[in-house]
Each structure stands twice: as C-alpha cells, then as structure tokens.
Amino acid sequence: MSSDVSRGRDAFERSEWSSAHEALSSAHRAGTLEVSDLEKLAVAAYLIGNEDEFVQVLEEAHHTHLGGGDPLAACRCAFWLGLHLANRGEIARASGWFGRAGRLIEREEADHVERGYLLIPVGHQQFESGDLDASARTAARAATIGQRFGDADLLALALHLQGRALLRQGRIDEGLALLDEAMISVSTGELLPQVTGLVYCSVIGACREVFAMRRAHEWTAALSDRCERPPDMVAYGGECRVYRAEIMQRRGAWADALAEARRATDLLAGRAGPGPMGLALYQQGEVHRLRGEVAAAEDAYHAASRCGRAPQPGLALLRLAQGEHRAAAAAIRRALAEAPDDLPRARLLPACVEIMLELGELEEAREACEELAAIAGRCAPGVLEVVVDQARAAIELAAGDARAALAGLREACRRWQALGARYEAARAHMLLGKACRELGDEEGARMELSAARAELEELGAAPDLARVEALLERPVRRRVHGLTPRELEVLALVATGRTNRAIAETLFISEKTVARHVANIFGKLGVSTRAAATAFAYEHGLAHPPT
Image (spheres, rainbow, N blue to C red):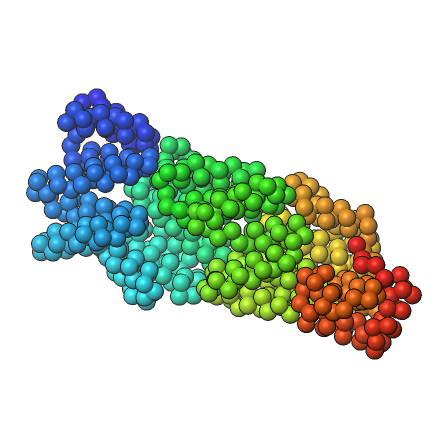
C-alpha cells in the first residue's frame, strides 16, 4: 500500500477532507487505489465542493464494482449518484441512475438493505408531488429495512423523510419526534459524512418550516463543535450556516449572525443553486436592517432578490422604518397576494400587522393577526404563539384599550425572555411602556422603556433605540376622551380644514379608514360636526399632531 493511500485513509477518518482528497487523488493518479478508496475519494471531493469530480469518481467506482462482480456495491454507488443528481436538479440523469440501481437489485434473490435505500428516492418523489401519506408509508418501510439490517445511514435518511412528511400533514409532535430520533445518529457520529450533513441541514430546515425554533436552537448548539470541526467542508456547510445565522440573530448575537451569514455566502459562491445563496444574503439584510444600516440592508435585499429569494418582509419593514409608509404597505400586500401557502404567509403576516398599525388600518391588522393565529395552530407551539399574543396586544393598544393590552404584553415579555429572543423581548417592553403611559402610570412606563432601552442599546438596534429615546425624552400626550394616537393625528388634520381624502393622502391610509376615525372621534367627543371637533381641538391644545 502506497504512503499516499495510507495518508489519505487516515485523513479521511479524521474528517480532514482537503488532506484526504489531496492524498487519495495522488494515489489515484498513480493507479494504486482500491475500489473502497475510490469511494472515499469521491466523498472527499464532494465535501470540499468538487461536485463534478464526485460524480466522475463515483461512476468509476460503480463500474469497478460491476467488473469485480459486486452488484450490491455497484447498486449503492448508483443510489448515491442518483440522490446527488436529484438534489442538484438533474432529474433525467438521476432517474437513469436510480433505474440502473433498481435493475441491479432485481437480479438478487435474497433480501438486501439496498432495497431500502431505493425506497428513499420514491418517498422523496411522493413528498414533492404532495402525496404525503404515501411518502410517510414509503419512508416507514425503508426505516424498517434499515433497522432490520442495522444500517444507521438508511434508518436516519428514512426517519427524517418520514418526519418531514408528517410535519407537512400537520402531525407536528409525531414528525418532530422522528426528526429528533434521526438527529441522535448525527450527534453520536454514527453516520457517513454525507448523510450527517444531509440529515442535519434537512432537519434544521424542517424545524424552521414549522417554527420549532427552540428545537432548532437545541440541535444547533448540541452540534456546534461537530459543524466547526471540518473547516474545509463545503457541502451542506453553506445552507447550515444560514440556519445557524438565523438562530444567532434570534438569540441576539447579531455580529455572530452576520459573520455566519457571510461565511455561508463564501461557501455557497459558485457551487450552490440560487435559492441557498438568496437565503444567506437575505439573512445579512435582516441584521443590517435591525442595526439601522440602511444602505447595506438594501444592497443585501436586492442581491437576495437577484438570487431568487423575495426580499420581503425585510424590505417592507425597512421602508416603514424610513417613513415610506405607502411603499411599505404596497410591498407587504403584494407579497401576501403572491404567497398562497401557510408557511410563507406566516413569515409575512407579523410585518403586515406592524405596518398596518403604523398606518392606522386596524381592521386589516386584525385580519392579518387572526390569519396568523390560525396558522400558528397548525405549527409547533412556541414562537408563532408569542408573535400572535403580542400582535393582539399591540392592536388593543392601538385601538385605545391599554388595559386589555397589558396582560398579553407581560406574557409576551416573559415568553420571549424564556426563548432567549432578546430583541423581541425589548420590543414587548417598549409596548408595555406605552400601555402604562396610556393608563397614567408614568413611573411604570419609564421602567419598561428603560428596560427596552438597555437591551436595544446592547444589541445595537439603532432605529428602535431612537424610538425608545424619543418616548423617554418626549412623553406622549395623555389621551383626551379616549382618543387613540392615530385619532389624535386625524383630529389635528381635521382642525386644519382638510377633507377626508386629503387626510388619507397625508397619512397614507385609505379614505374609508379616515371616515371611520372621524366617526370614532365624533362619538368619543360627543360632537356631530367637523366644526365642533375643530373647536374642541383648539380648546384642548390638540390642533397639532402628537409627537
């Protein structure tokens, strides 16, 4: 055995993929590799990002197994070729390799574990076509075969596929339990490196789909050392880093999240499809937006869009922060019109609530909130439930019922803190401060606002920090006769003599909404004409919009 072969095998066992690839490639050129080493070379090539070489070398291993009279090993190579090509979108070539693998196994009279492997692409096809019952059954059959033969790789692939199918059916607890079982094999190092990466990234992605963010965080934390250990691994690394960046952002580690998203773009450059790269760029935009880095956020969102990742809701929220209310509303409404499925809509609806509240469109905010609540009932308990509770409280506060908003906001604060979501907890404290002030509790308001300020300052959330500072330095005027902040704005504009249409154009809301606000103002003030409302405004110092 040559020194290159020995060195390559040792490096492979240590997960040093670049070193393994270099040594085994040298031995391959010298013609000293055994067929099992060819497979190692193919895996190492794949993991460092040489996908074409992976296909070429694995095809060579397949033919070598056939020539050596080992059709089962050749079948296994054909399976991996088909799976890789399918993931790369080369469906025709993938189908050909799966077909060849099927013919090889048909020649065998005895039962073999390879029959289970060939159920995996069948289950994936059923999953993608929407036949979730069939996909779950096929994956369960594959899992049974993997368990019978003691094949940890097949079992993990099957369990994770079955779990994803159950999640899509709304069987959240069952699906997550199967994903957890698959991840145990990942965490204990039982699997082939390519299976480890595939299952890990797929499971974290599935957790994101159903908003099981606590679970995603737990597995990411548990596997952080394993993920960092092979720094030269390109395959799977990019997509996984995007997910990790999202979790870091949620936990308040924004600098780390931005660095992780940038590493993801570096790993994905030139080798991944546009989708993963778009996710990485969008994630960078989110951190820049939260920190108030407008130009950098815009650049990242536009780059994400060019890579096929819609820039919403981030770009709409950026426009809202810039005071471009009409643009923000148009963007989020258009995005929702193009998002027919639950999960994409769930990522847009919280922003819709925030934007519509800023515009005074309470009914539209309520509709968005209740739709989000319905979706939350079909997802994993946790993040979405808190988002809904806080959104409902924010709507109550905007509608003038600060007392009703208090309980929901305090519960949201508690649950965000339990989830480690520092930014969201700070935003809840800010709303609590507003509610306390509306109820005349200035001391309580300043305590809540100060808590929000301390957290936002540490996070570097410049736009939200500026809003809190303004509230602390220039207290919002106490309400008169129960008028909401938006109603005070409308009253001030009525006092200038503006028509409903002119007020709508000034505030970037619909004329119908203005008419509703005017009717509410008349009712609360006990007046029946615009002249009487104007007189009230001047008498009580309300002829200028509140700051």
